[in-house]
Image (cartoon, rainbow, N blue to C red; front, side, top):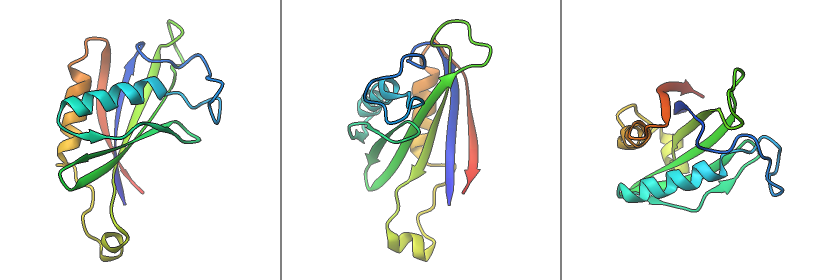
Length: 138
């Protein structure tokens, strides 16, 4: 299984105040997940309401017949200057049916349009920096 991660840094989103509704105290990303959902919608994607996981937040996004999970999590940088100086990770994984998984079809590829869209959304923001991508083999 393949996953692509997009990493970046920003002070825009909360990585310092633990919400009373957080499953774990590290579940930052609620505000970022909602912002990303809105940005994807503006770019023509259908994106669901973000939901919490025990490590962060997740959004299901769809364009045409392709569906993706976008997991987001952030944490305070080690050398942080400011209470929300965060390092963020967006984990992009293709949602595949059981049949596709069993047959080895419809794998996540580095040419998936959603990867370029998410990167462009981030790069358009003046307060988001150090945007970079990583391939993760699971």
